[in-house]
Length: 408
Image (cartoon, rainbow, N blue to C red; front, side):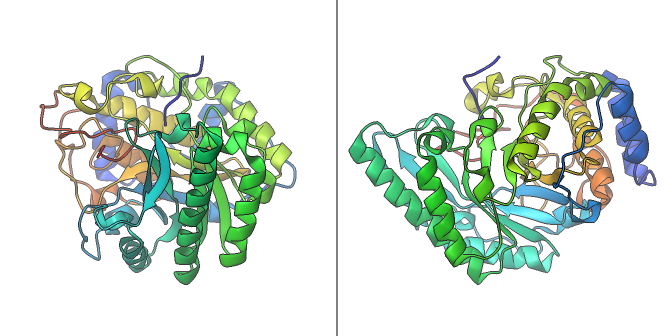
């Protein structure tokens, strides 16, 4: 996610009570769930819209996490922590790489992370099944020198031909993996929005080829500022949105303020769902545990510039709570995938300002809405204070938190 544009369900958690009390004391407002939370959203002025012919049963709503592929093979139970926190889906992400100067698409290479290769993806899917998780296979392009694919576009006719041919091979290869592993859903791309807008006929043809191989549901994950312009939603099963909408720039805004800030985006999303005749899927959603997490996230320091950035778990937890209050009970909302989740129990220092909710107040919020138990997948108390300093080693060399992957 990036852009150059623009503008208590399950209140029996003892851990939740303690952690959320900390969040409230940090000034982000009370955090509830279920019917009371929905009522709170309505009292803040949000309408309860309906979209004809688009409905997702509550029991079918996706409770997902986006898995960060490990460098080396993981333990077979590494995804159990996500299931314990209430997740019933996981997004498995096989990255490919492209150089803007020479846009050949490189994927399934020996030097890649284990979890990004076809073999690692297949094994991860197997492990997900063992933890009771359904799977979204979600190919993601990493652009050398910039990471985010949203500004990538070939420059010449020859480059267009090379890229489109290679990208087709990449997607069809993983369509074969999805079919062979009986994966429940696949995305045909993630935030390659300039290409998607420039060549809609190419994408329609690609989608048809994927359907000839793979029989599961299909989506595309568009960035929050471009999804409404995508022309081929009718060829897919769900409207996929990477939902990093800017809400409030305050360091630690109140939940009620965030709920109200969702309203204009809610109207736009409802209209796209109505026009496409498809439910909205948040193919990614999430917030870092830093000041201003619910604002213009792409402007926050990242990578080496983020070293020493103060942690703010209250801001992250409030943003999670507001998102669930606004969206969880809407019939045209298909659910979503929290960005992001690591194998096992990641280092608290490592993820102190990261997007991951693991071991933080945000995990407790997510688990309460997903009807899981954060205490089974996270430490019994906050691993670091809600606001703390991160050492220079916390993010590690070259980490780009918003891209979810280190630069090569």
